[in-house]
Amino acid sequence: MTQIDQAVDIREGEELDLSAIDRFMKSAIPELAGEPVIRQYPGGASNLTYQVDYGDRSYVLRRPPLGKSPSLLTTCCAKRR
Image (tube, rainbow, N blue to C red):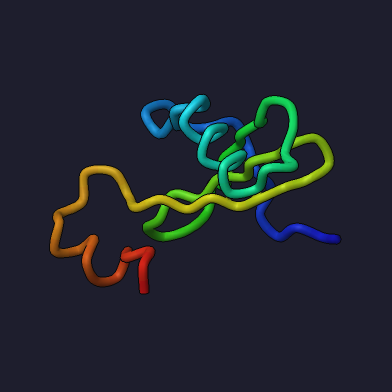
């Protein structure tokens, strides 16, 4: 598989809570084992996008942008649409 955007080290100030992500992922996918390795996709216009790897399994995690107004988060950056 060819990736257009390669994940890189997470930008300062955009880190995630590794233990919270691990708990969430393992509750959603019980067969996951080990510790996650998280990297960030540098491209994109608004939502922060991360690659979460557990061994040879990769997942994509998106989150709203940091510091945006609540009205923006309910429209263009909403994850629950």
